[in-house]
Amino acid sequence: MDLNTAYKEKLAYINQGLETLLKVRDSHPTVHRAMEYSLLAGGKRLRPVLLLSAYELAYLWDNKEKNEILKSELDLILPMACAMEMIHNYSLIHDDLPAMDNDDYRRGKLTNHKVFGEATAILAGDGLLNLAYEVMLENIPGSQHSLTNYVSAMAEIAYSAGISGMIGGQSADMENQGKGNTDEILNYIHTHKTEALFTASLRAGVLAYRNDPEVLHAVTGYGKAIGLAFQITDDILDLTGEFSQLGKATGQDEKMGKQTYPARYGLEKSKALAREYIDESVSCLELFGVKSEFLKALSLSILDRKR
Ligand code: GRG
Picture 1 (cartoon, protein in one colour):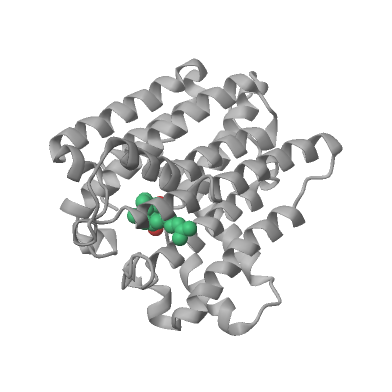
Picture 2: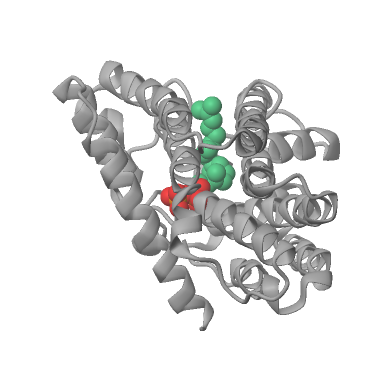
């Protein structure tokens, strides 16, 4: 199966999961509508795709004779993958607020606060963050052995989304706007703000199956490399991309004096750096051969992304 077909299958599976998990909630209609507006607005779903793919890799590595994972096996972990997307969506809603990046468009639609007002957008973000933990806790698998794995995966997610991960990165991002660009600050912001959730998605996927040090080590290296490559391409697209494809305004980083790779290294060096990180990510998975084909192809596709 080629990358596009495999990706589309995973996307449909995740979108269905998100819809179902949100629909069954007994929630206040205003905040529910605002949460639904952003969560079902059609993102790339990269973080849940990574989580499911890492779970699949751990499963296939443990079951060497098998070439694919049963849907019933993946169903056990779908709520956790969806929770990761909920956390990501909360961060986007809050990031777009006037107090943060003050953006009017996201995924080709007006941002949440532009439609529902700031107070409801804040609550919708809070609601999604909380819902992520609700759905993970409500879907803990049955056996005692799985419980230990599942809880360590949840801890990984909580840590990466918190003050030692994404929130810390966002804080550093805001504090350093308009200031001199240094390697140290640039690296801190991007490893924490962006790469942390990528790596945590992969590690959580492996841990939820089984704490296999070999697979965990490999996906950690892969995650760190694609996380940074993704951020570099994000910075590049902010300079060279199109609103019609990105679904959000371009040129924002420069306007806000953000710490970016192109601002620090120039466009060409940034492209070369992204390529280096992608090559590194692929080499991290060499050991797994055909069993890691999807993750390798996904990484290579980051270099050509338009949105
Ligand atoms: C508010 C705590 C808090 C954190 C915000 C996510 C984030 C941190 C900021 C968004 C700004 C930004 C451009 C971050 C860098 C890369 C990134 C996370 C892009 C958005 O992710 P995609 O491209 O989005 O995966 P889709 O729409 O596909 O889900």
